[in-house]
Length: 71
Image (cartoon, rainbow, N blue to C red; front, side, top):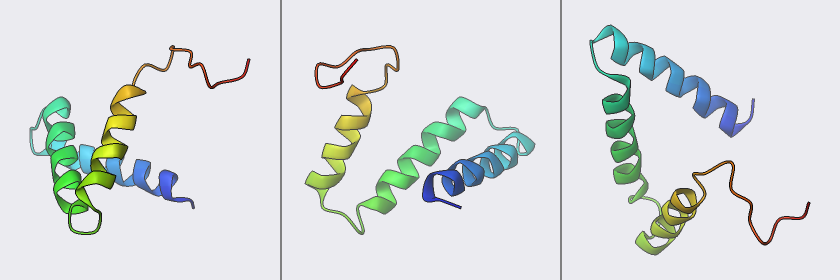
């Protein structure tokens, strides 16, 4: 199993636990994201982490075409 598949499965398990606890999915995702960012600061530089988060935020729109992509 690859890292991304593992992460998706782990996320689904945690979201199920959140639902069982009566937590809204949007709030659970926000708090999980905050916890991951907070923990990531222990092993990555702030600049590296900020760069990755900026890249992810800039690429949220799956329908958007990018100049560097080939047809």
